Length: 294
Image 1 (tube, one colour):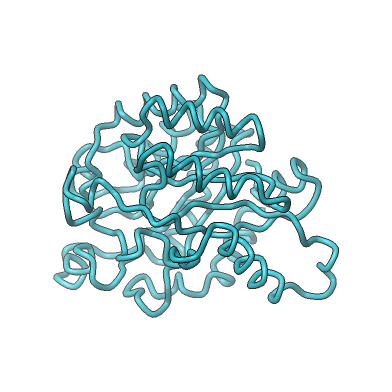
Image 2 (cartoon, one colour; image 1 turned 135 degrees about the horizontal axis):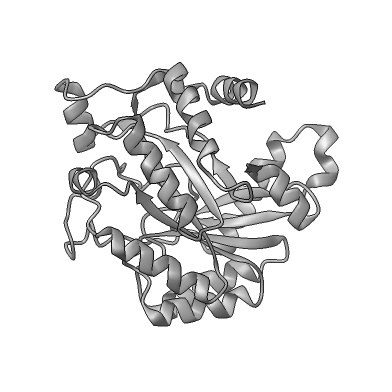
């Protein structure tokens, strides 16, 4: 297992901070191309609850993100400022005309303190001309593409309204890796109807799919989502902290030693989080994970 902080320090020569960018995108699961309801778990911000204001330019968003990060840094970290990843997080960040994508990505990648850009998207939103653009950008600075897979199980995929088949993910990974573009796969742990073995099967699949990184995300129940309606109707329960920590340990054992773990949990916005409430104390969760995994 390679932890993200260790990987970033080794690759970029010091501490690197991520700034969440909002490029003003939508999603084919919301604009009617596939559906209008979005994925069953997705917040009204398209999983970009902590992203900057989309009305601002990319440069302004980066500057605002920098200030927010720097203001939180203890004085002992003064010398570690100046390395940032521009993370296009909200909604589907390759879903738009390639001219729009080029303008936004170029503004981010040319920022002198940005060392890489990371682009969250769907595997079914990577046409050849977009991959060509990503390839071009990857010659300037590292480009990472984050694919929202969530699960390999078709029944679960239908339930969460993912909107594409597993073969689409496989093709996206091949196309990106053919251009030497790094891929990070998102997996949600705790989806209704999935047991531990189901989740481990997804993790094993990702580990063998040729990607370089993985995000292990605890299922969050967020207000004003269809998932929240099912939770409040008693159709499923969320994992306890102990169950989740034990599961993470099992997941990591299934992954290649050289895979970068970009996330082992997640923190939904506290004002909209319904369950599991223990996940709101991210520091406590990470401490327990670190204690268990070392």
